[in-house]
Length: 189
Image (tube, rainbow, N blue to C red):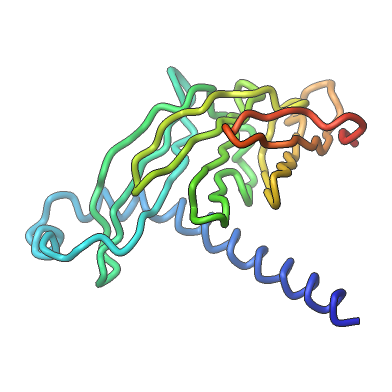
């Protein structure tokens, strides 16, 4: 009984965290434009970095990218930079909103996984103190990846098909120590 309750509680907590991340991902670019280089934003420049906020930009041309913001101790954000992650974004995939299109692993936040819905790929990015380095892009095992979940070296992607003639699916991958994705046999449904 306790295990079932804990799993349900863990799923609810994970769902709440994913919803919060998606909301932040949608609000941060707007906040960055509003704050710009105002005196209010620069007044906080002496505060130390208390964490990072990562935003998947869903770029439709060129290369998809992730923008990093330094989160200060008072909650203010400062643009740290943008890193190309390969792949392409898609308006179709994000028209109805997504949850889990960009996720950070719980093992000390050392890796990001991002969907590239326009090119049917997943980008894997290593994280070190807010600095990003691309491991690579990998086939999502379907069309129109929109959501990811990760735990204990296993990554699952929801491929929404996005109006294509293909069928939506969920595909599973083993993630090796280097961040490379390996499809799990029989784990596409």
